[in-house]
Every structure is written in structure tokens, then in C-alpha cells.
Image (cartoon, rainbow, N blue to C red):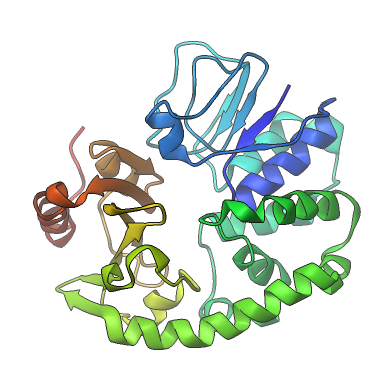
Length: 299
């Protein structure tokens, strides 16, 4: 029996809850959603999937993404909710009682981007927000760190966790990166009507990263952001991430449903897809035209 999830705060907390609720001995199998969609992940009978698309080989599935297709029958729970961890927490409510309640409140808040301007500009003042930024889901070399976080979150308070030497080192690095990230956003972002477009292709496969919400505070006239970067392992493949502004909440396009039509998916307010360079211009122009029209999608 394995937990299969993605490496972000929600995925880490899903693992925390499943380890606590069930008798699981194996390490987490970390995957990205497109590995499930492209049938690249090794999903086996007994696996418990969380915060990723359904796979027919899995024994249980927990998810909250609007774009993920539901099988006719399955064991587990799918619910449109702020986080997949919250879905698991409610499913096993008799096990947890009020334990992990604060963790779930903050995971819901962060995964649904329900943040204040102050939390976005100064994450160092908010432990859970800062902790979430230390989880770099593009760096699978960080698996030992994700495993460490799971154990810390199972046993320690957030104040104790933030004092852990490895967490503190990574938190300090995040604060430093965020200062540089603001300059990168200024130099590489353009606006097209209501859309901000951050183009990081010039960095090739070593695209920088930073506070994903900061762009919304810097370009308040836009209601949706588009980030373009080369895939970490393939300069010929591009990753496009799109998100509703968390401050200018006037974008009407359901991004999860939109991107599900382009080999991607996500939530109503955020999602991503991958595309080969030769197909990029056609796809991005189509998506930008939809975002600028800002009309609800028809099924």
C-alpha cells in the first residue's frame, strides 16, 4: 500500500493524514498530475491517490480538482473543496477529531489562494505560508525534505517546525529568492488587456521561481496571469501555468475546464498544461483570446 500524491503543501498534508489514518509503511510515491494523464506513472493495486487525477489501477482516490474526471464508482472521495487534504480530513473525521484542525485550515487557505495582500508581500510573517513556499514541486531531488516535512507535521507544532534547521535554511532561502523574484517579474512580464504574461523561456530549463501570488499585487489591473517556462528536463516542451488574480476577482473563465481541453487541468481558478514548442503559438493564442473575452465557458 502506497500513498501517491504531488509535491506541494496540499500533497504533503494529504500524506500526513493518510499515514495517520491508515496502516501504511511504504514511502510516498511522488508524481505530477500530467504523469497520470499521460500514463507515465507506475500506479498499482493498493495505491491510494490524493490530489492528482484518478487512475483505474488505484484502490482509493481523494481529490478536489474540478477538471479531473470521475469514474462511475471508486473508493474514497472527490469533492470540489479548497484542498484535497480537507477532503481526506472530513472523510476520516472520526479518526482525527480536532487533531490537525489548524493544519487543515491553513492548507485550505493556501491551496485555494485565499490570502491577504500582507500575506503575499510578507510571507515571512506567516509560518504556514512561508513553509508552503519551501516545497519546490519541480525539484524531485527534494524527496528527502518532503519526507522530513511529513514526519514533522505529524509530530510537531508549526512553531517547532519553523525552528527545524533544514526548514529554517530553506525558509531563509525563500525569503532571499522572493526579493530577486520581484525584479524578475518586473523585467519579464507584459500585460495584454486583462492578462499578465510572464515569459521565462529565456532562462531555458533553469527558470527561476518565487512567490506565485506576488504578480497579482504588482499588476492589479489584470485579473488572470499566464506563466510560460521551459520544462525542467526538456527545452523543447513548455509548461504554461495560468491563475486567476487573488485580488482582482473578475475573471469568469473556469481554468480547470479550459485546460482540460489542452492536455492539462486544475481548479476553477488555477491550472497548467504542457505543450511542444511547435504547437505553442497556436495554443497560447487561442487561450489568450478566451481569457481576454472573459466569458464563462460553455460545457
